[in-house]
Length: 477
Ligand code: GDG
Image (cartoon, rainbow, N blue to C red; front, side):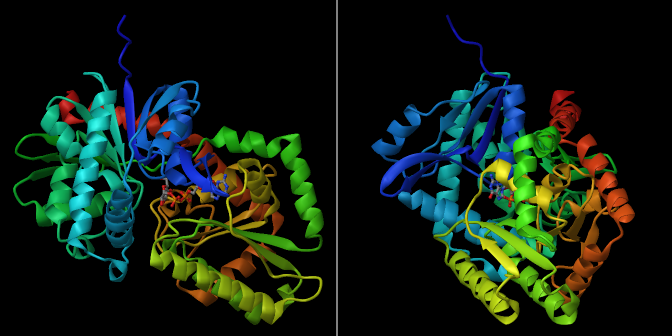
């Protein structure tokens, strides 16, 4: 008997499990990062196939480990295996030395090596083939993020009638930055093979449409407030900003649970008489970690009344460690932590408590709950889920969110958060002071607004809005 084809195939660079060497042995670990956090609850609820790479190199050992891996209850993984060279040129190279810095407005960090582009196209074809194998004729194929912007091109060539959607998790740059990309036209035309393109914010939608106008002159664009429709030679594409979110109850319920509350008590008892400020980030230069540490140093220099009264817990999850810029960043962060602790520390007070590893989800929720202030100050960020998770985890409807105006989350959370320019060291220091001194009634009022916003616009709502937008896309009508 033939099995029913799945209704949804999600395609992303990584699936939620990672093959990694640990003390010389290859093991399976859970992957962390915003995309996995966002898509996991959605697939749990919806079912389907998740196509992506499990990391590690294409080898019999990795295949064997994946063959024995447990699949989640409601969906299954279809692995795409990458060679060492593909990891180097496609992943580290084109994805993370070209697209990542360029799309975060940091073009001086780009390395436009043409070998990277060739590998990017080859690997995108590989992902397209895996998606095609997993999809039935009516399946929606939903491709995610900047690693896979050419997958739609191959899929469309093989399946002209397929339903294809794309979501970009990172920002889309304005035309005067995007134009530096030698393959700008190919990237835009590849994206236009989808029926729907979702972006994080209105600004990203505006930038993307601006780039289409500048670099693909043959198309017609209509629309405004309710999204844009692009008519190209062969098809129509609907473009819409759809801000991603979190599984709100997962955080709020865990935060209120007895084991988490017990951990919160322990963490607070350890910092008795002090307020806790918190940073949680992947180790990435876009997250503004050195700039934040310098702002915290300004707080301690400008306002000595906070000595022994505040501790910054900074959790940094190792990321992309084989890329030189990331190694330099780690050294810079560690130097700054040591300098600041050296300058201000006392026998009974360490100003910055630095954790350089991923901690378990429940422990993270306990830390969110224990911290009076969250310092989310990326230089540029597609959304930033940590900002939303922090609010959802505040069981006592209290706590102050300090948020960079350059995070995608700022457009939804501006009414409750204290918005800052992450490049303004003294400005961020003043915002931390304001947060630490904020009256309880104002903290409560602001947090209530934030929680209401995030609870209503949660991840399942995001999915529903995405599916509603697909129905609106011209191919569906
Ligand atoms: C990309 C875009 C966009 C962090 N530390 C630990 C841990 N985490 C989890 C957090 C959160 C995720 O990692 C980080 O998500 P972000 O959204 O903040 O950032 P990116 O990884 O850069 O994500 C971003 C996102 O995609 C979704 O579209 O918002 O702009 O760059 O979920 O909880 N998880 C655990 N331990 C940790 O120590 N378990």
